[in-house]
Length: 228
Image 1 (cartoon, rainbow, N blue to C red):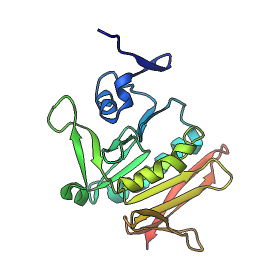
Image 2 (image 1 turned 45 degrees about the vertical axis):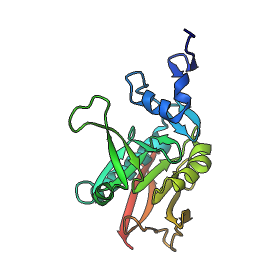
Image 3 (image 1 turned 90 degrees about the horizontal axis):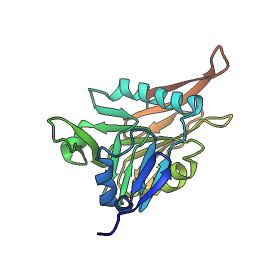
Protein backbone atom coordinates (compact mmCIF):
# COMPACT_ATOMS: atom_id res chain seq x y z
CA UNK A 1 0.00 0.00 0.00
CA UNK A 2 1.36 3.43 -0.94
CA UNK A 3 2.34 5.67 1.92
CA UNK A 4 0.04 8.66 2.41
CA UNK A 5 1.85 11.97 2.48
CA UNK A 6 1.35 15.06 4.60
CA UNK A 7 2.37 18.66 4.14
CA UNK A 8 4.47 19.78 7.11
CA UNK A 9 3.91 23.52 7.46
CA UNK A 10 5.78 23.99 10.73
CA UNK A 11 7.57 21.59 13.03
CA UNK A 12 4.42 20.77 14.99
CA UNK A 13 1.83 21.11 12.22
CA UNK A 14 1.13 18.37 9.70
CA UNK A 15 -1.49 18.97 7.03
CA UNK A 16 -2.71 15.62 5.69
CA UNK A 17 -2.86 15.26 1.92
CA UNK A 18 -6.62 14.66 1.96
CA UNK A 19 -7.11 18.10 3.59
CA UNK A 20 -6.36 19.71 0.23
CA UNK A 21 -9.96 19.04 -0.81
CA UNK A 22 -12.92 20.73 0.87
CA UNK A 23 -14.45 17.47 2.11
CA UNK A 24 -11.08 16.24 3.31
CA UNK A 25 -10.39 19.50 5.11
CA UNK A 26 -13.74 19.30 6.87
CA UNK A 27 -12.98 15.78 8.05
CA UNK A 28 -9.60 16.89 9.33
CA UNK A 29 -11.08 19.96 11.07
CA UNK A 30 -13.54 17.73 12.93
CA UNK A 31 -10.89 15.23 14.01
CA UNK A 32 -8.79 15.13 17.16
CA UNK A 33 -5.69 15.72 15.02
CA UNK A 34 -6.73 19.25 14.09
CA UNK A 35 -4.53 21.83 15.88
CA UNK A 36 -6.06 23.68 18.82
CA UNK A 37 -4.00 26.83 18.24
CA UNK A 38 -3.52 29.08 15.24
CA UNK A 39 -6.01 29.85 12.50
CA UNK A 40 -6.32 27.34 9.69
CA UNK A 41 -8.83 28.07 6.94
CA UNK A 42 -9.90 26.47 3.68
CA UNK A 43 -10.33 29.27 1.15
CA UNK A 44 -11.53 28.21 -2.31
CA UNK A 45 -9.08 25.35 -2.76
CA UNK A 46 -6.24 26.67 -0.61
CA UNK A 47 -5.39 25.71 2.97
CA UNK A 48 -4.29 28.95 4.64
CA UNK A 49 -2.35 28.68 7.89
CA UNK A 50 -1.66 31.56 10.27
CA UNK A 51 0.29 30.61 13.39
CA UNK A 52 1.37 34.20 14.15
CA UNK A 53 0.75 35.47 17.68
CA UNK A 54 -2.15 37.90 17.97
CA UNK A 55 -1.13 41.53 18.46
CA UNK A 56 -2.52 42.69 21.79
CA UNK A 57 -3.46 46.27 20.97
CA UNK A 58 -4.26 46.22 17.26
CA UNK A 59 -6.14 42.95 17.22
CA UNK A 60 -6.99 41.33 20.56
CA UNK A 61 -8.41 44.38 22.33
CA UNK A 62 -10.17 45.57 19.18
CA UNK A 63 -11.90 42.23 18.72
CA UNK A 64 -12.84 42.16 22.40
CA UNK A 65 -14.44 45.61 22.25
CA UNK A 66 -16.54 44.67 19.22
CA UNK A 67 -17.61 41.39 20.76
CA UNK A 68 -18.54 43.03 24.07
CA UNK A 69 -20.76 45.64 22.43
CA UNK A 70 -22.48 43.21 20.08
CA UNK A 71 -22.96 40.66 22.86
CA UNK A 72 -24.90 43.22 24.90
CA UNK A 73 -27.11 43.97 21.89
CA UNK A 74 -27.66 40.49 20.48
CA UNK A 75 -27.04 37.63 22.91
CA UNK A 76 -30.18 35.94 24.16
CA UNK A 77 -32.62 38.42 22.63
CA UNK A 78 -31.90 38.40 18.91
CA UNK A 79 -29.59 35.44 18.65
CA UNK A 80 -26.06 34.36 19.53
CA UNK A 81 -22.60 35.81 19.05
CA UNK A 82 -19.26 34.01 18.85
CA UNK A 83 -15.65 35.12 19.14
CA UNK A 84 -12.67 33.01 18.01
CA UNK A 85 -12.70 29.36 16.93
CA UNK A 86 -16.29 29.48 15.63
CA UNK A 87 -16.02 27.79 12.25
CA UNK A 88 -18.23 29.00 9.39
CA UNK A 89 -18.54 26.80 6.31
CA UNK A 90 -20.13 27.10 2.89
CA UNK A 91 -20.02 24.13 0.58
CA UNK A 92 -21.16 26.26 -2.35
CA UNK A 93 -17.93 28.28 -2.39
CA UNK A 94 -15.66 25.73 -0.64
CA UNK A 95 -15.11 27.98 2.35
CA UNK A 96 -14.26 26.90 5.90
CA UNK A 97 -13.04 29.76 8.10
CA UNK A 98 -12.93 31.04 11.66
CA UNK A 99 -13.82 34.77 11.59
CA UNK A 100 -12.95 37.00 14.53
CA UNK A 101 -16.61 37.61 15.47
CA UNK A 102 -19.81 35.99 14.15
CA UNK A 103 -23.43 37.03 14.78
CA UNK A 104 -26.29 34.58 14.21
CA UNK A 105 -29.95 35.55 14.60
CA UNK A 106 -32.61 33.15 15.86
CA UNK A 107 -34.68 33.87 12.76
CA UNK A 108 -31.80 32.79 10.52
CA UNK A 109 -31.48 29.49 12.37
CA UNK A 110 -35.23 28.91 12.19
CA UNK A 111 -35.37 29.65 8.46
CA UNK A 112 -32.42 27.40 7.64
CA UNK A 113 -30.27 30.28 6.40
CA UNK A 114 -27.65 28.91 8.77
CA UNK A 115 -27.50 25.72 10.81
CA UNK A 116 -25.31 24.33 13.55
CA UNK A 117 -23.46 21.17 12.56
CA UNK A 118 -23.39 18.39 15.20
CA UNK A 119 -19.95 17.54 16.55
CA UNK A 120 -18.28 14.30 15.57
CA UNK A 121 -18.80 12.99 19.11
CA UNK A 122 -22.59 12.93 18.46
CA UNK A 123 -23.19 13.97 22.06
CA UNK A 124 -26.47 15.85 22.62
CA UNK A 125 -26.30 19.63 22.12
CA UNK A 126 -22.69 19.56 20.89
CA UNK A 127 -21.89 21.46 17.71
CA UNK A 128 -18.59 21.99 15.93
CA UNK A 129 -19.40 24.60 13.28
CA UNK A 130 -22.11 26.54 11.51
CA UNK A 131 -22.99 26.02 7.87
CA UNK A 132 -24.64 28.60 5.67
CA UNK A 133 -24.88 32.37 6.02
CA UNK A 134 -24.57 33.88 9.51
CA UNK A 135 -25.91 37.40 9.73
CA UNK A 136 -22.73 39.36 10.47
CA UNK A 137 -19.08 38.40 10.14
CA UNK A 138 -16.30 40.59 11.54
CA UNK A 139 -12.66 40.42 10.45
CA UNK A 140 -9.96 42.39 12.27
CA UNK A 141 -6.99 42.85 9.95
CA UNK A 142 -3.51 41.84 11.09
CA UNK A 143 -0.16 41.92 9.31
CA UNK A 144 -0.32 38.23 8.49
CA UNK A 145 -3.97 38.27 7.35
CA UNK A 146 -4.14 41.52 5.37
CA UNK A 147 -4.39 40.04 1.88
CA UNK A 148 -6.83 37.35 2.96
CA UNK A 149 -9.11 39.67 4.95
CA UNK A 150 -9.20 42.50 2.41
CA UNK A 151 -8.96 40.70 -0.93
CA UNK A 152 -9.65 36.96 -0.83
CA UNK A 153 -12.39 36.61 1.76
CA UNK A 154 -14.88 39.39 0.84
CA UNK A 155 -15.80 37.91 -2.59
CA UNK A 156 -16.25 34.48 -1.01
CA UNK A 157 -18.38 35.88 1.80
CA UNK A 158 -20.48 37.54 -0.93
CA UNK A 159 -20.93 34.26 -2.77
CA UNK A 160 -21.77 32.51 0.51
CA UNK A 161 -24.63 35.01 0.98
CA UNK A 162 -23.44 36.49 4.29
CA UNK A 163 -25.59 39.61 4.69
CA UNK A 164 -23.04 41.85 6.36
CA UNK A 165 -19.24 42.02 6.58
CA UNK A 166 -17.39 44.29 8.98
CA UNK A 167 -13.72 45.03 8.34
CA UNK A 168 -11.56 46.69 10.98
CA UNK A 169 -7.94 47.81 10.67
CA UNK A 170 -6.43 49.40 13.78
CA UNK A 171 -2.77 49.22 12.74
CA UNK A 172 -2.48 52.80 11.48
CA UNK A 173 -2.82 56.23 13.05
CA UNK A 174 -6.49 56.27 12.04
CA UNK A 175 -8.77 53.32 12.74
CA UNK A 176 -10.42 51.98 9.60
CA UNK A 177 -13.89 50.65 10.33
CA UNK A 178 -16.10 49.52 7.43
CA UNK A 179 -19.54 47.97 7.30
CA UNK A 180 -20.47 46.34 3.99
CA UNK A 181 -24.02 45.25 3.24
CA UNK A 182 -24.89 42.53 0.73
CA UNK A 183 -27.11 44.07 -1.93
CA UNK A 184 -27.85 42.34 -5.21
CA UNK A 185 -25.18 39.76 -4.52
CA UNK A 186 -22.44 42.35 -3.96
CA UNK A 187 -21.12 44.12 -0.89
CA UNK A 188 -21.91 47.82 -0.79
CA UNK A 189 -19.90 49.95 1.69
CA UNK A 190 -22.13 51.91 4.04
CA UNK A 191 -20.98 55.51 4.05
CA UNK A 192 -20.26 57.20 7.41
CA UNK A 193 -22.08 60.41 8.27
CA UNK A 194 -20.36 63.64 9.31
CA UNK A 195 -19.81 62.30 12.84
CA UNK A 196 -18.46 58.95 11.72
CA UNK A 197 -21.59 56.88 12.35
CA UNK A 198 -22.08 53.95 9.96
CA UNK A 199 -25.42 52.19 9.53
CA UNK A 200 -25.75 48.43 9.93
CA UNK A 201 -28.84 47.39 7.96
CA UNK A 202 -28.78 43.92 9.52
CA UNK A 203 -28.69 45.15 13.11
CA UNK A 204 -30.84 48.22 12.51
CA UNK A 205 -28.39 50.48 14.34
CA UNK A 206 -25.52 52.81 13.54
CA UNK A 207 -22.03 52.21 14.90
CA UNK A 208 -18.68 53.89 15.22
CA UNK A 209 -15.45 52.54 16.65
CA UNK A 210 -13.53 55.05 18.75
CA UNK A 211 -10.25 54.73 20.58
CA UNK A 212 -8.41 56.67 23.23
CA UNK A 213 -5.13 56.40 25.07
CA UNK A 214 -4.92 54.49 28.34
CA UNK A 215 -2.79 55.76 31.29
CA UNK A 216 0.12 53.68 29.97
CA UNK A 217 -0.18 55.02 26.40
CA UNK A 218 -1.77 51.90 24.91
CA UNK A 219 -5.17 51.98 23.20
CA UNK A 220 -8.67 51.56 24.56
CA UNK A 221 -11.45 50.81 22.06
CA UNK A 222 -15.18 51.34 22.31
CA UNK A 223 -17.83 50.32 19.78
CA UNK A 224 -20.56 52.92 20.18
CA UNK A 225 -24.07 52.46 18.82
CA UNK A 226 -27.26 54.45 18.34
CA UNK A 227 -30.54 54.12 16.49
CA UNK A 228 -30.22 54.66 12.77
